[in-house]
Length: 494
Ligand code: HEM
Image 1 (cartoon, rainbow, N blue to C red):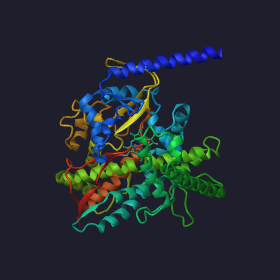
Image 2 (image 1 turned 60 degrees about the vertical axis):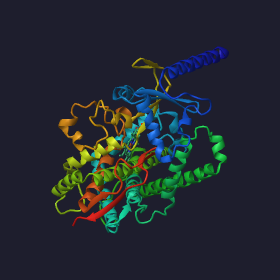
Image 3 (image 1 turned 135 degrees about the horizontal axis):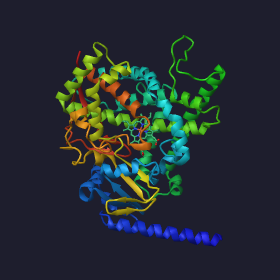
Image 4 (image 1 turned 180 degrees about the vertical axis):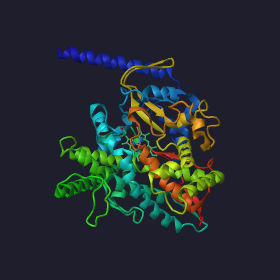
């Protein structure tokens, strides 16, 4: 019986591989060679040209093509209609093999898990992103924006400054406080062990992602492997300590965390995502401490680089388009009157043109330019029959620049997002936060954060970019960022 099962398994596997090879042979793409696959096309390409080289294949072979990352096949899709087939189907929620390098840090958090576990956790965590909870985070957005404004005040001296790290530190302070209820003060002091480990591990992920031929076994013996383990120890140690301290405090108080919690001075305290997860965990019966740590770590990973990149690109685009910047400024002044920053969700909702600007920035420069899935059922795409378990790269960047859906797609034109101009657009032609059941759970949080910080900056300063958009190099590890940071001149408006 066992022998027959094994034979059946081997036969199915052989048939699957044959079907995949047949499909890959049919699809357009660069010639494939043993060991390197098609990765040889990137050899010698400078880091800041890699993304363009990668995207270049869309023009060369799109809309549907294939690459080989070493011996791993990859099918690329760039048309909204095709992305919808996968993203809008709750069967195809399994992530690609590329996410495995995140497991040691994020474990089975929302981003990396699938199946029943993902479904249960998503259902449990969704209410923690309710707008009533997000409203509670406005205090954090405002407080951190005010600190950022002070830092930028000192840079409004007529000379060129790179404000990328200021934006990064601000986003990190926001996510630490909202996710864990901890103030790491990255804006005043980035010499923090935890912050340094986040930077370092992100770098190591990228290093590994472009070297699929280095196995886990080999990696653990490399110097970088040791660094990776040290970073992990710091990151997990920090989150574990925050969780256990918070649990003790809540147990001592003998009551659940709630958003109207007051401190000893009677001042309303903020609830963090961690507090909400601890409350939902039902004393460990629904979520264990490890489950909670994995979700908090996932928020930390997903919740700062993405918004930093979004704000960085918006600042560069505004610094290159003074008329659009003036329109944003006028709107902000109208809504805020004499205030330096927005302070309520109502005000943020009134900043409609700024929202168009942020969306148009995310269209041109989506923080997450592509995502990966492994499909769980055969599907038909045009003339191609795609067998189950094929690895697919879904090109968010490619979709956003598709001339069939955007006239003059490389032009920065926020008016595209006015209601009258976007009503007829294909629903999958604008998907910076992905779409369907596995869309970004933090998208409202991200929009509120970006709006608060950007409105505060534009309200206080006139920005002039130093590099023109055509000259700015794009670099993408996991996140799409400007290679040289955000080089701007700041002029105080008041
Ligand atoms: C501009 C900012 C952001 C962008 C562009 C963005 C984009 C995305 C995208 C494209 C995905 C799908 C990833 C995939 O399928 O591989 C995703 C998932 C996710 N994002 Fe975001 N994100 C942003 C901000 C945030 C923030 C602020 C948080 C948390 C506070 C967050 C938490 C998550 C989580 C937990 C997932 C996994 C959801 C699931 O699979 O159920 N994101 N995000």
